[in-house]
Image (cartoon, rainbow, N blue to C red; front, side, top):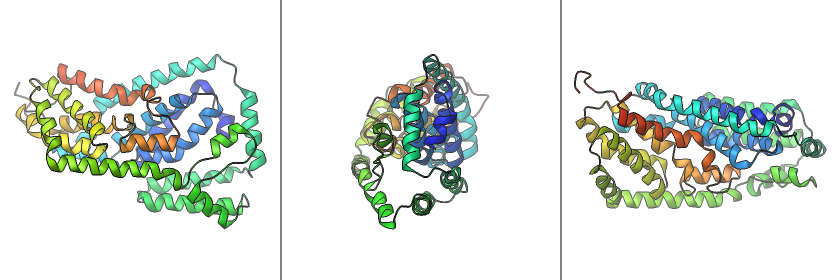
Length: 367
């Protein structure tokens, strides 16, 4: 995918193409993690080969991945938010269009403008040719090998559970390595456990391809376990409820109620380190407050996703942030300014809260 991507894409359109491709895959699969772990990794390699900084590429991938994670009916968070608020799934998705649509348009415009910064520069053909030459010398390249990632994406689209789907992709990748690249079964097993080590002799190629393996994910998994345990302790002891209750005291209007919900979800993502707690806890705390203001439950479910889902990858110690950093090879915080959808969407939600736009009432005859 890196080899053919370098031949097709140009720097000026790459970031927008990355946003759109990640959005399509995530919308079809309902999983931002699956998107980052499949097409996201390939797009990082292509973008770096085109001379685009990794944080920008990562921001485009995360923006697109979380667009689909937020809007897809297959997403777990998209099902969890309306369940917590008391809304139905599809009225929740339709209501999110009002905040997600403008945010997505802003993201497209941003990445178009950002891409223009590279269109005026001369394409580093020397580096691209060096990478492609290194790939050609180290591997038996064949367009039929693209069947492997296509099959993986197809498996997920067909709603096959993630574990057997990705395991099937690993098996197909191993078979391709054995029968096409001439690897031994032992080398395949070593790559699965310790990761693949590229020894092409070309630094740019080796940096792109030396990654992966069970060992490389151990730090991320340990962080996820710690975050889940910490979040569970805080919820069970009532500390999370106490924090949310204090914030709720400041909610004197619909606008401040929306701000309180968003700040609580953001706080849960930072303190508990898990996006599910960032949806469940504010959903429990503010459900009655929205009902008292005669606001339809889909307003709460939309705000929960605008904040709980979208801010989770922005925090490095959050399970989502840790996964994105480890999977895409990003440095903490550097990618955050380029996650435009994730940054703009909560602000659009706050704007609607204060203006009353799209804040639908349970009884339209009531003020």
